[in-house]
Amino acid sequence: MAIRLGEASSISEGAMRVFDLEGTRVNIAHAGDAFYGFEDTCTHMGCSLAKGELDGTVVTCACHGSQFDVTSGAVLRGPAQRPVRSIPVTVADGELLAEAPSTVR
Ligand code: FES
Image (cartoon, rainbow, N blue to C red; front, side, top):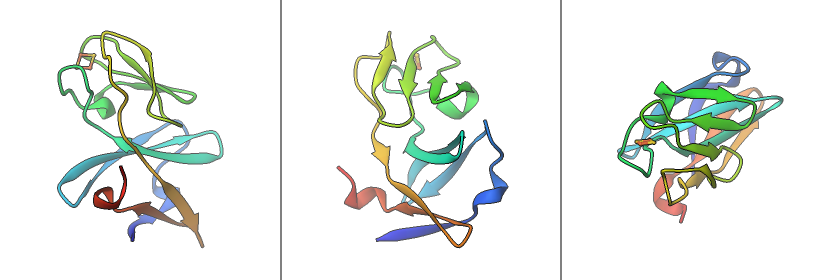
């Protein structure tokens, strides 16, 4: 099931925005020509990744510097050990649609 998030143009290139989807904080990053969704909660100690920095497709947690690949959720640099969950995002007619977190493993 897809959840409508509003106009894709509301997130400028290089920016991130957090949405509450079914009680899960989902970060949508606009990197290059694409949008990527992932759980906003850092798997190290739970900081919001939206408070960190997005550089290309790499997000750096502001708390202790862990880095994640927003395209896959993979850890690129610790101290985090576990990936963040990716949430598939599509754009249709200029509108952002995210998969419901409850349907994404
Ligand atoms: S909480 Fe993100 S690196 Fe520690």
